[in-house]
Image 1: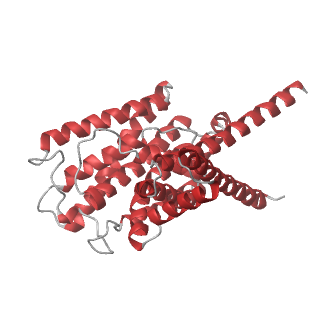
Image 2: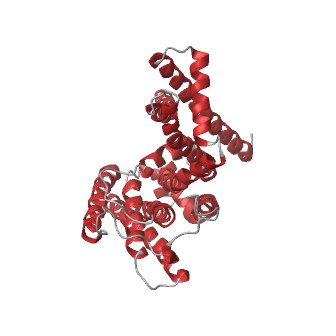
Image 3: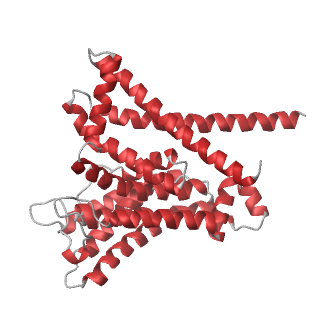
Length: 357
């Protein structure tokens, strides 16, 4: 079997695993609906699937709103995909997304700037903020070997509290948020002001292509994937490990920060005081896992999780707890994680057999 066929076989296997994980998640959720109600399996399944469909795709309004939920998840999914491909676990995507939102909100209230300057400044500022925020734990890992998971988790809390400090210092009277962005700093709602979907969705799709091209069509992408595949082999081949760790984290943070800036510029239009994490970064982990870190797969995975998030409110209208939506997401993640664990154990056993021989 040639390399091309092997590549396609792996892609189809990955898609099949993700689809199976989604199906298992739905079936497990049906069982919980049966347990929590007096309905049978068929009726419970019908009610669950009908509520999920109507709440996310059943009307044009819900379909558009599902896309609104999916846009930030595309960015955070891509951010995690970059890190995963380099063998890193960037838990700090949440904090980088928050920093992107904060910087966009601060730059966006500057008065008197023309749109052609103001809007790019908002988006670039958010992206650079996310890149710098991610590069810090990346540098610490590369320089001192500290675990990026611990450092990025701490950076998430720092980002949240910095945001709250800035909001408290600059909040509009009678609110717990910054002033509204000027019109020159806001993305266009191309379907009309009654819908929240903006041109940010096109930027998200453009970045899907950019990330794919970066990972599979450039020397930088080759080095990042080599570091993620086998750290020691990459170093033996002359690849600078430390540089690529910092670079991967910075690119991951840049995409997350841009997602935060687009969310502020297109949807929220101001930064609110945070009493908890928005969870776009954490949901992005699930998006990237289901997509197998494939940039194009991230699009469909983000739509799936966006639909589940949106339809959680509709579930209650059918007498189903909205927690079922999160149950589906959790089951999908567990199933995919189990596949990775199974593969890891299989590889360890193969190495032991070879060693014993």
